[in-house]
Image 1 (tube, rainbow, N blue to C red):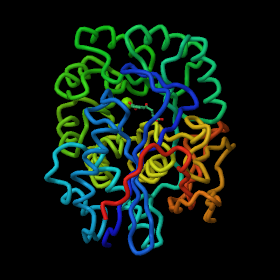
Image 2: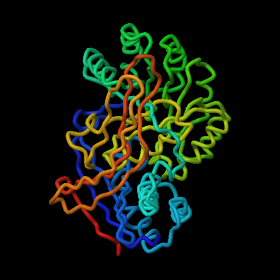
Image 3: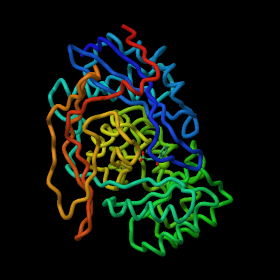
Length: 402
Ligand code: OSB
Ligand code: MG
């Protein structure tokens, strides 16, 4: 495949509800999308970097700069046989994994489109059913949180993850557990704690959390191992796992017992798959994280989550949890279903007239979720050809570096 043109666009997307984590409040996302062209086929990638470098050291502005000046020029007119060729193309540029991931994932999507197979299949996906959970931000009041949890459980989500920080932790877990003693419950600190909190965090074993995500520094796994030794609850690593070597080192050190794989954080599908494989070989479960993606990134996450070792519910939720209107059509939907759902696949082309934007395909297989004994389960429809609708949200556009 020779990549003949690359287009970069920034769009602005207001979140349906503000999302608060220990590192800040997000009310609107600025999203960098890349579009590739090759012999009449168009494919897309979404960069997950936030507006500020608060989750990692990348931001949309650093990603834009690196994509325009370093990465896209390396990919443009390059002869690539598959997405797996991208890491070597980009190797000279250190870091900037979220920027690299957007381009690499667009190459994988291009490959799937040209071969006429689903992205899930190309990635090595085997699952037709993907367990889905939700990540719930810090709320204005505990009461508001309880209402939100109630709504998400009613929608069928299988795991509730609570964002936490000092001041929004044990009292909250206490209340939630008092009301829902049995649900799969986890928390995500986004690096809000320090070693002096270790004894207090060890006390959280009483809440029977499925995991505690990234309690300590974003770039640490040495001290996470020290903390993990004091806990019965599993630590899940997110921010600090950048690649397969980190995954291996962290798991061998005992820094955690679960890994959250985010395809953007690790620089694209090639590395995400490698981390999945390392974890699998060590008998460690992984799950698919999210970064408040719009539809392009969301679809890519779903395809990734179809790999076999993604055995825990991911932060893979419906478009409407985040957006009044997503940028893909159809949107990612999740429907509560009783018992084993049918595999829904829609393969029609949905073209909304007048947008002037090319359409793109995500075919994964389908969907649904998890354990079940009469409980509701959730289906994500992930086999579709979606149109990307972005004209009304465009902030800037650079067309191709041709
Ligand atoms: O740590 O998983 C995280 C959102 C932004 C940045 C970091 C994280 C998150 C989430 C949201 O938890 C997950 C989602 O997209 O649903
Ligand atoms: Mg996290």
